[in-house]
Picture 1 (cartoon, rainbow, N blue to C red):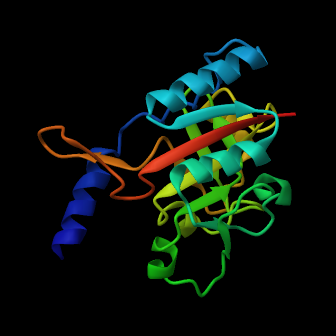
Picture 2: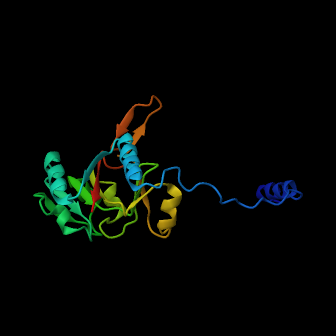
Picture 3: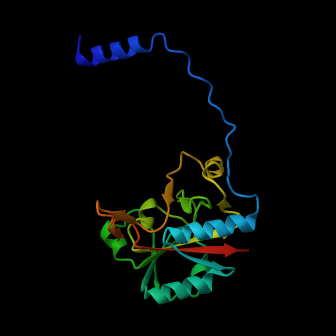
Length: 207
């Protein structure tokens, strides 16, 4: 008998007389936030900012995004398929298409990327991308140093993770973003931009 077989035999013997597992209860709260769209929006804004994302509210994305790109000094902007044309209508930066053969070096040379999202979660300050229209491939949200993400208010905002899970397709490539990329060493020295964008700007677009 191999070591693996001996270990498994001991496990089986140990649980032979164990009671049946209890039924899983599903009566937990699905949200800890009041059912108030204004309160949910304010909570999302607060938690995004707490994660050091830069948050903007607007009812016209085009002028604001053009202003953000100009303030950043971005000469180029990565554009995924399906991104609404009006979001970049006033931007002077050179558009770079999201193509399957783009290399990491080419993506790294782009100054900014603008995407939409699948939804945003207020209680955790999280943006979720699922590679749908206006979002592009996962890598474009990881390589460029500056990410502008547009969230449609209120359609794309949920209060909690359980509410988000009921709306997301687990078969899609989900990317969960809570603030700009950050990591800390054992002395808690925070470094941003190691595993993704150094700067995340979230545009909460009403209307």
